[in-house]
Each structure stands twice: as C-alpha cells, then as structure tokens.
Image (cartoon, rainbow, N blue to C red; front, side, top):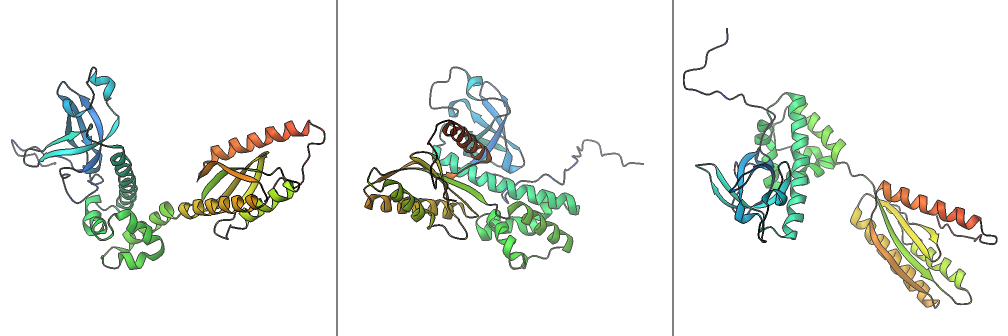
Length: 317
C-alpha cells in the first residue's frame, strides 16, 4: 500500500531528466538569457528562462520596447522566444526582472551563439542520462558544470573529446557505460562535417589573347587550392564564374577562396583584363547548389539552341 502523504505537505514528483544548463540556479544581473513567452498581462509578459530549467521571469511593460507601445500583443506573442537582459534577481522571493528594449544587435548574436552551444551540450547530456538511467543533474554535478569552468564552455570541451576523450575526461570518475555513451554521442553529434563554400566572380579581358588570359587567370586561382580545400571553377555565363570548395574548417575554406580570387585578379590585370567579385566567399546550402545547377542547365539549353556557341574549356574542374 502506498504511503499516505503527511497532512499539509505537498510532494512534487521530480523529473530526473530536467535540469538547468549552468551551475548557478539563477542568472546574474546584466546576463543575457533566452526566454519563452508564457502569458501576457497588463504589467508585462511572464516568461520562462530556457537555460535555467524554465524558472519564471517577467519583462515589465516599460522594458519591452524603446518606442511607444500601442499594442502589447503585436509586440510580443505567447510561445515566441526572445533574447533579454537580466535587470534584477531576488533569489529569496524568486523574482527575476528582465528587459527586451536594452538588448543590442551585438548582444543578440552573442547570446544566440552561446545558447546554441549550451542546447547542444544539454541534448547530449540528456541522452546520456536517459540511456544510462542516471539523473541529469548528477551528470552535470560530476563533470558537466566543471567543464564549463575549465574550458569556458562545455561545448568546447566536447569538441576536444572527439580527438582526446581520455585526456579531457581523466579527472572524473565516470561509470564505463556513462563514458562510452557520452563519447559515442559526442562523436556522432560533433564530428566536423564538410562545409560547402562558394564565391562568384566576373572575369573579363578584351585584349588580343583575351580567352587565353582568362584561362590562365582561372587556373592561377584554381592552383591556390590544397588537399583540404580543393578549388573548382565553373562558367555560369560569360563573364560570370563560380568558385567552389569543400572544407572541414569554414574559415580556412573562405580564406582559400578569397586568396584564389586575389590570384585571379592579379593574373588577369597583368594581361590587361579585370576581375570583379560579385558575391564574396560564403557557406552555401544544398538548396543553393540545386539553384546553381538549375541555372547552369537552363543556360546550357539556351546556348545549345544557338549555332556556333560552343566554347572550349568552360569547365575548369
């Protein structure tokens, strides 16, 4: 027979898989936090702090916007996530006052980056908790929160675990199943994936050897590529070319494309031509690749309908 609760005592069933992301139970004043709007009242909006196990906070009406508020419902909606700054924290009463209007664009980018990292860490920790039947807070107390202190962010520690798991986890006494599950999940989630990168460039030369000069310039750009970032150049439609590469390190890949653009520019300039970067080097998605392939296919069909439009060496792969 189940034990009856004592009179006047409320027992709360704890969810072992719920836990705040950081060691502090409450954020500090001036901290940037991610919140989700729960309800809107006359005084402001009640929100839950996603990084702090959904504890409640409030954005006062006067802290919602720098502009005059005509309709609070148009300014903030239930269910929407917002980036806010902490004004005051009363730990005894559990009050947390927040502001949306004092958040700058730089703050938004910084907070989003931190939250995305924390969310990835939390997801991995939760998976380990559920798989190994260990309370999530116990895992954070054993090693999770300490990794934040040692590495600035646990996400950076997790990235090191991909290559040096034993070295990073050596200070902690972890059960074999917990360690194996954690490392396997980190390897699956955080192993670097190749990034597709592209730059669009126009190359022209109206001199006597213009075609040969353009070929030479494009080959000079292609030669900048390495084994880690092979550069391919394709003709879209004269004088537009696309430069593409795939790299594990996004910044390195972008740097290589920029170096290739510079090499093309220097080479064609010596021949009396000109190179203009139409779109700077950037990461592209599968959708971008499909759009490019569709455009090139369309242009190829159009060119095929015109006699004498065949060209030699349009593809520099």
